[in-house]
Image 1 (cartoon, rainbow, N blue to C red):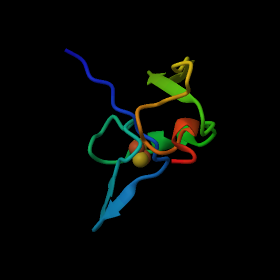
Image 2: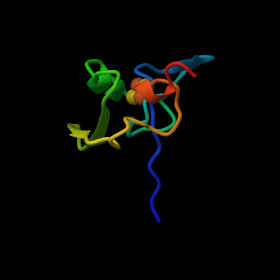
Image 3: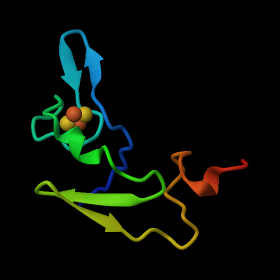
Length: 78
Ligand code: FES
């Protein structure tokens, strides 16, 4: 079984002296390893797949819905 989780953060969250990964890309979970820098130029309305530090843009549903994060166009005006 597999699970896809959408992450939209581009920076870690500081907890005490630790930096916790919020982007989901760190290879040293739950701690930040700097991999979030790969996300800095992501476009807001696009969806990406990351693997081995390579990024691929993924086609979204035709209505642009991403599943209810509140960031996509389908949530505007609600
Ligand atoms: S926030 Fe994920 S690697 Fe830094």
